[in-house]
Image 1 (spheres, rainbow, N blue to C red):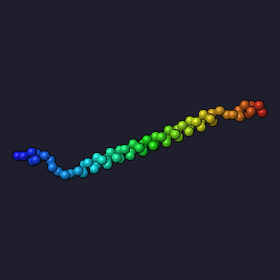
Image 2 (image 1 turned 180 degrees about the vertical axis):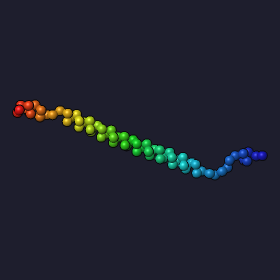
Image 3 (image 1 turned 90 degrees about the vertical axis):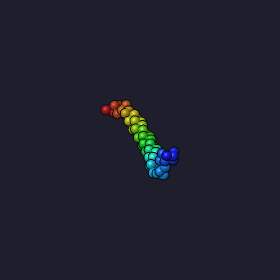
Image 4 (image 1 turned 180 degrees about the horizontal axis):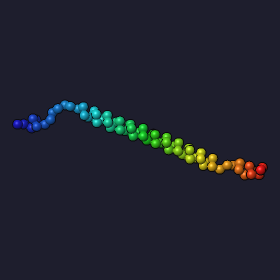
Length: 67
């Protein structure tokens, strides 16, 4: 029995393509999630700033003088 008979000489490389495709799709999914998170954080920050500027009624002092 020679050493060549013990080795698996199958030229089945389909698993390698699937692993590469999975790795690429995971990277793509990570990029999509990162972009989604960035947009969400931007919207939340805009809403926070809007709430802070709307909390104070600048005309309140003038409204009380005319009652």
